[in-house]
Structures are given as C-alpha cells and as structure tokens.
Length: 194
Length: 255
Image 1 (tube, each protein chain N blue to C red):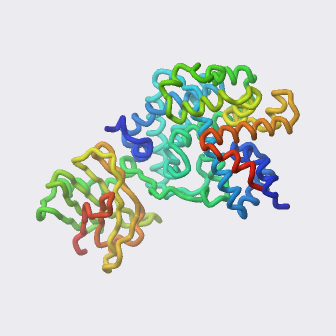
Image 2: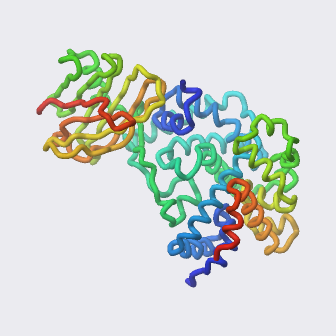
Image 3: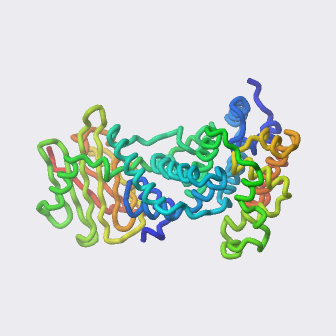
C-alpha cells in the first residue's frame, strides 16, 4: 500500500507526479520538514514558505537522490535546512540563541527524559538523541548552532562569546562524538589517522 | 594553492561536512580530498553524522491546508516546467545536496541511476491517443500485440499474469530539438512496490540496452526516458523481473 511504501519508492512516485504518492510523501514528511524550518526561522509564516519550497525542490531534484548516500528524510531535511538558512540570511534575521536552542528542545533529550525516546528505542533517532544528550552542553550547543542552524565557527564564537579556536574545537569534537555513537570505533580510527 | 596535510584537513573536516567552510577554505579542503582516499572515507562518515543530526530536529504540525498548498504549487511548477521542456534530462551536479554536490569525491559525483520520470503532465496528446488506441485495440494473440502508426509513433502492448497485468509502450520520434523518447506504463495485478529494469532491443538484433527502472507503486508504474537511438532503430522493449528474468517483451511491428 502507498502509505506503507518505503521512502525510496514513495519518492519515486512523488517524482512522477502521482497524486496518491505525492499526498503520502507530503504527509509522511511534513511534520519533520516544518518542524525543522520552524526551529530555525522561528516565524511560522516563513517556516511554511521554506517548507513549501523544500517539497518543491525535492520534487524537482528527485532524480539526484542517491540512496547510497543517505536516507530520504536526511536528504529532504538537508534541503530544508539550507533553504531556512538562506531565508534567514536574506532577511538578515538571526534569532537569538536561546530561542533557537529552545526550539530544538535539547534539554529534553536526556536518557529516558524524552517521551518518544523509549518508543523509538532502537531506531536512529533515539540513538542520536541519546548521543546528543550525552555531549557536554557546550559541545552540544555548538554542534546544534552549526549543524542545524548553519552558523559558521566564527558566528558560533561570537554568539557564545568564546575564541574562534574554541568554537571550532567544540564543533569538531561534538560531530566526531556523534559519529562515533553511530559507528563505535570510528572515533579512534579518525584520531589515529593522519 | 598549498595542499593541506591530512592533519590540517582533519581539523577542518567537521566544518566541511557541516557545510560551514568559506570558499577558499573549502577549495583547499576539496583539493586535498581529490588525492586522499582515506580522508574521503572519513569525510563521508562525518557527513553521514551531519545528515543524521538533522533527524533529531523537533517535529511540528504545519498549518491547516499545508498539504493542499504544496500540491497546488507542484502542479503550477509542473505546468511551467512542462512548457519549457517536456522531460528534464537526468540532472547531475548542482542539486540541493550542498556538500555532496559540491564535493569532488567519487562518492559525490555518483548520479542516481533512475532517469527523471514525468508521466502525467508531459504526456503529449499524440502519445495519449496512441495509448488509448492500444488499450482499446484488437488483441493479437495471447501475449503480444503491436500497433504501428503512419505518424511513426510506435506502440505495443503485452500482458502477463494470465492477462491481468499489462505493459504499454509508446515510442515517440524526436522533434523540436528533443531526442526520441519512450513512454511505458505498467498496470500490475500486484500492488508492489516493485522496480523492474527496462531495456530496449535494437532493430539490428544487437544486445538489449538498459535505459532505467520502472517503479511500480500501488499496482501502477510510469516510466519515460530518452531513447538511445531513433524510433526506427528500436525493435522493442523488455521489462525484466527483479531477478533478471523476462517479465514483458513488447515488439513493435515493422514500419
């Protein structure tokens, strides 16, 4: 059935313009697309504009999606994040950090603290939430600002009031730990290479 | 430009994976990547972690009517796109995947093997008429029927699953600067989802040429592609099972 079709198949149907597939694709992903857009731009009207454009881009560029490189949700959210950042830069609007971070509800991601965490036990999202919750707060903030809000290391250093080198270190260490949580042992391999 | 060492690259890899580097920094990092496979592997892993980070973003219910507005916008975009070009050719670089599209790593230069698929909007009147003609036409034999038209649009339809599944193909000559194209529609008794390889048989008896995959969702599959040769050079079309065995073989009648 359409509603239980794998993400890849649904994206293929969406690309053809099939009405059922398009409806199913949008319904499956609209909450996460709008949620990410809203978290970044804060303004609901702008978030809807961004979300609409994200779905339009996904439709136009569906042929460039490569399942070997990642999942459909990650691909779609990358489009959304980039559009949201572009929209903010265009408007020269840059929400203050507490608002942005509150939007991501990272404080609620501690082990067992998030109501959906246990329900999602075993899936990637639960693993990621747990991994993020396990990061020191300064690294978590830097990683969210950089990875989800698209701020450069320089912008993170300014907003956090820390030296540029410290901002870079926090971003790098945070992402490496997140990567290690997805693939145990990878962190050691990375740090040992040259 | 001085090439970075692996240590220098490693210090910037996270920012590259997150798409945060400036133009110069990015160029230097990519130059290093071009000659360092181990750093490419590590960057790919960091890029996956960066992608995964997006999945933890909170979800929120969009405003009422959002779905309808998106669908309306797609319809409008589709109409405009159709007016410019009936079918977009498979795009390569330049898509929305920021890091991956810009990276010079082999991983980033891979293209999705599935051709761009548009069926409903770009279906020309001639092709639609041809399909209707085939659909209501006389069935010649149990398994294969072919139908040649003076306009050089060539059609064929074949059946499987004891006549419960149908494959209709239409080959359209090139025109207005566009190459010859193939439209294919599957009406399957099984809802799927399934994906079948599509190949064309050259008229000279040469080896069949793969041209893409047709995805079947909810029993319906649509596919279109630019043909590798003119319509008169094509003998027919094959659709294979996922295990490579033959599912449909549609043969155009001689012109």
